[in-house]
Length: 259
Image (cartoon, rainbow, N blue to C red):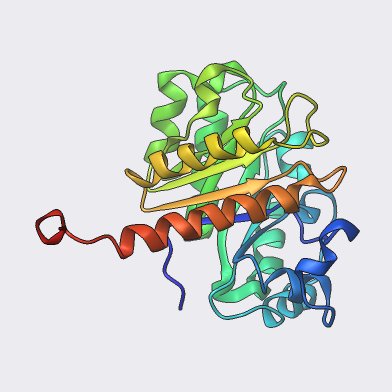
């Protein structure tokens, strides 16, 4: 099994025409995607339900080392706004069990209007944590979630705070909360979901990931600038850089043996 502390993927596994030549011609898009990248974020679960059999099929179509993250449905985060979600959590967690051991992370993305309210947040994350041992990350977007009280609550429930670009406040650009998993989401800037990242920006992203790898047990990097198909190209570029850095560090000679 591949053992890398920094992994790169995209939100969804669509392969735009511009990148088809970089992937095998045969197989489903997910099967082809999984020949080049080792993680993917399931975003469709935010918008609609999938049967357990669908998740089972996805898990069965990728290699053993491949891992998924799955985004919680908007019915919990945007409609019920984290309140009274026990029934919805049970349904969703039952469905995604179809991914089996290949489900690595659950993503809770909050609406920009949702302020931090300690009791609501505690009730929700206590319930979610009691129902699953999967790793949890949260992408809050209201400034109140970047204050010490919210940070302490996320840490207590072992929830990593997503590092997002563009960042709604400066603190949102770096991971927070539980620090064992650093989870980055690059949405595209200046135009969210649409903008491509230029070469110098991708180099800076690689630097951020390397910095995060020094303190986190694992780093996930997800490109979400999918509207014009840029996410996949950005992910392939950064993944290649990460692989090269990993190879170089593993093969570096100790200073005492260098000529």
